[in-house]
Length: 458
Ligand SMILES: Cc1cc2nc3c(=O)[nH]c(=O)nc-3n(C[C@H](O)[C@H](O)[C@H](O)COP(=O)(O)OP(=O)(O)OC[C@H]3O[C@@H](n4cnc5c(N)ncnc54)[C@H](O)[C@@H]3O)c2cc1C
Image 1: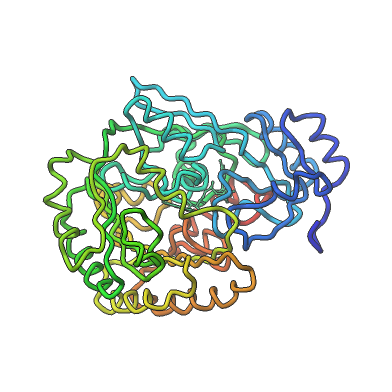
Image 2: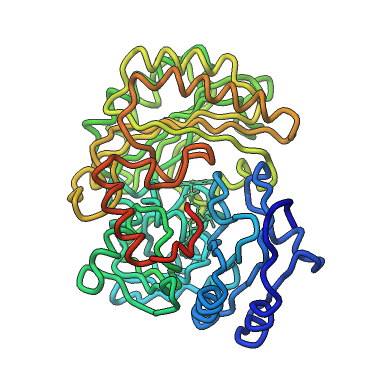
């Protein structure tokens, strides 16, 4: 138990043991040490107890016990949140990691997804029917947190964010009541779930609309870091006019040991243009050609690939257990000054694992009506994620300073507000990261649906 956190009373533990079917772990239980961990090793918190729920009924019972005993509660979906929002010292952790079922209705083109599912679960289940919906770039990311924070992925410019494909959510509220939120049922709750970052209840099931999905035309073009400014300028110029089928990301990093890249370049600073075209492959080249041709590519590995395989390709680069410090900024454009700052940064990334990701929005993301969801970045053209990573705890303070410093240099170009999915633990709870209008409405709904503030501020 962490110093200062209050143990969960024995009467509450006894009630949980009596009422739930899932596994309850206390700090003295052997698996607790492993199961309290989240993806980011820099998050070191000690929940008072971990309840690995078997089903939605367990969630209901857990919240009733929490109400009866005034317990603080947190929720874990995939545990990928870099700020560690799934964990709080001393709180009861409602862990959904055993609730990962996905049921696809191929005729209705919908998927019902349990609250603890990972994108791997959804992508595998939908691919069997030649269907897909916008999911995360790394397949171990939880559907829960990803969706509640908006959900940006390769299909978003064609089919919208994850929240734009969300038809309904089954939610257990703080007092244990079970409700369904959709455009017609609890529409205010449905608004807040779509981009508000959680803290309103436990979503036990998400229902997504699906789309026909054949192979994508996708891959990477790698250039020396000296061509970072060139690659970013071309990306900036191509992105606004590109068809919705195109989604790209420019990555500034040290070259991974890819088999199609000359080994002499492995570990050296490079700029990687990651390109995905989700429409007719025959039409891809007209958009991708300028992004592939410019400068002196060291490797060009782009072609048709099953969407499911593409969704898993980045997994190896994002293992759990490293110390992560992230910052994010949304931009209306990529001015030359921002490009210069980024191009300089790639020459001196603070660690070999640190990366900078520049992604573009627009397309279906920009067209969805802003007032219908709590997602506040429909007008942003680009977002920049500074992904600070080190395997070593003692290198963390220096990494954090370096990432903060670079983030500071981008601030004059940034729009107000932060993307909740990429904000860090020192950015405060999600409502603090939103623009004032969204924050006021979200806070009011959090107070309405969770009047006793049972859910720890996230
Ligand atoms: C390697 C990696 C790749 C990523 N790629 C992308 C990407 O491509 N696009 C993108 O938009 N984001 C991406 N993210 C960010 C990610 O979407 C967020 O960190 C998100 O919060 C992770 O969700 P989770 O369920 O795994 O996290 P958790 O840490 O389990 O939860 C995050 C928050 O959501 C709440 N929550 C989770 N599930 C539920 C639920 N069922 N009901 C109620 N509350 C719940 C938790 O309480 C917590 O507040 C990535 C993150 C990582 C680490």
